[in-house]
Length: 473
Figure 1 (cartoon, rainbow, N blue to C red):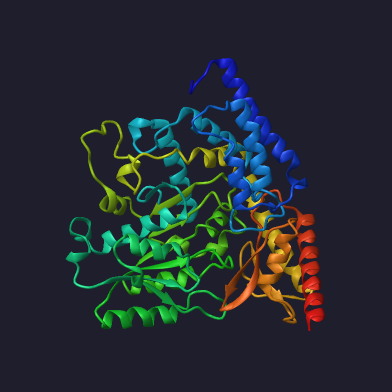
Figure 2 (cartoon, one colour):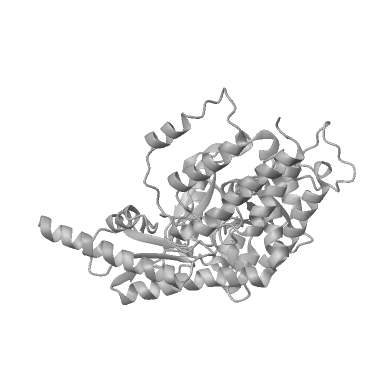
């Protein structure tokens, strides 16, 4: 039976809860990086014939083992990874309740309470970002990519009213939008999927600080207009993926107003700073945005996936996505149906886990966790400089990009050596065209001892690589 009797339900849910509890009790003793490969995993899974039932009482502990042995332990405090956080207890509890009650958050009448919880959160975040909570609106998304796509479609419809019904063929020129070269690559997919084509993404040069050069933005917009293109939006990033940098939001906003561009701010990472009164100034100028992407499942430590799209004007969402259907009742909804305001129809109630974080622990406790993570990243940068590494993004929030100051070792090799040791996870990327090691503090479980251990591991990797190079020479 898909839902057995009460005794079986309690036993199975207790098994799952115990598995999670054991995992967090043992987390720091586990290798961060798995010693595995696709062949081994597929061999393990081949034991589970899907034609036959194996019983949940067997499956739960088996899956617990598989995740421990074959998964990257992203919640681990020594996983300095790609914006993948350790989830909060409130978020875990909320996801269990959502899975059990299974509200359909796409339409108000399908789950009035889910819709209103999310509306309550949307209004609160509009106010925190400095937008008018009465005029604006927004909704939850699967993550930043969907929110960014929503923002671009909203901007297209706002600037070109005929696009809604007639599509791109009704326009008298190719629409284009602007990003810095440190943009998130979801926008290339968005441009392709929306019919604009990837060439519609116009890359603006960055300054020596690796953020959008507004002078080049102005030049690019005016040059494109002169050639018959139709500029309609600019995307500013608050928390770049490579380096955690916040672009000059106020300056970009002034250009957007002067050039009649929709300003979308991709704050998928940096948006979490908004809950801290001390860190909120990093986002100065975001209150000028026309739309904002924000991912609570990054800096605010709720389980995957939970993104948000906020719009300065509720009417823009209606214009871009509004429709009516015969099969969805509209009485008592006050037009709060989420399917009328975004890309999804049926969707999971993603807001409860964020509600549990904020209503359970309070904003100040959540802000303290964010401030601690940002502070640890600053401590990491200080330690790197003290140990002969060169930090290339001193202004990056929560992220350190660095190289050996003497240039003795390859950054990619350093990152790979650390990962192969399985005691920590860091990545490599390119910043300003040069390879760097990248470390990001994403786990709210991280403390200073984990930063100190990472510094030791980096030094060990550098020494090992230097010795290898010396011997081979």
